[in-house]
Length: 220
Ligand code: 3NM
Image (cartoon, rainbow, N blue to C red; front, top):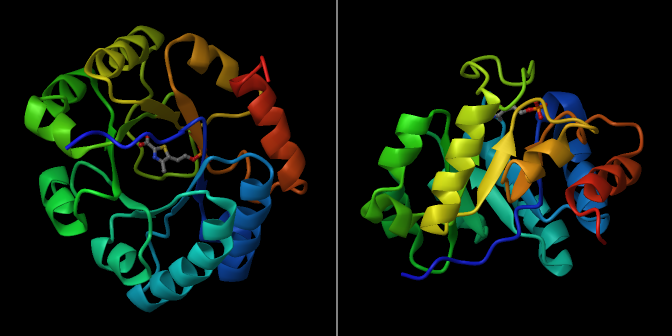
């Protein structure tokens, strides 16, 4: 399988609490997608499956015309039900080979990792062949994910980005990324940044996206 080309440069992860519930999530996604977010992930760890489905359907309706991929965190069944663009899994979710087999070759599969040993193992040929990008974090302290792993050192993070690049797997940095901290991550070798609180719950979502993009893609 050849890897899908996915632009991870500004990857928005939605949070129900920070967005003010389902309607707020859909509106945040719409504004962000209209103002430069390149991927949107639905993530709602405490939600019931029915809420996931309703929200995913609405997000798909909003994002598809804007050509911004919708990624579903963890729930392959929800992704299949709404024909989402892909699924993102962590280390304790379904293995990526299983996710790939369930989704088929035409969808995006993303994987989280939080240490260098992991990256080396994850980038074994079988696993690398099943994924389209890797999330690397947390790169800074975050209060949004309560069970986040210890923050990576700059050297460890840079080594992880380099391993991903060597395998041709795009790497997206996540965790505590704010205005002012995106540029150094791009300089360290990330292909993009994933954020929750730097966009969700911001009073001016379009401006937050524009400001982040100026750091991520300074030449544009
Ligand atoms: N995953 P914020 S950190 C969902 O390290 C998530 O894998 C992380 O939120 C990881 O941008 C994180 O508000 C939370 O810090 C990111």
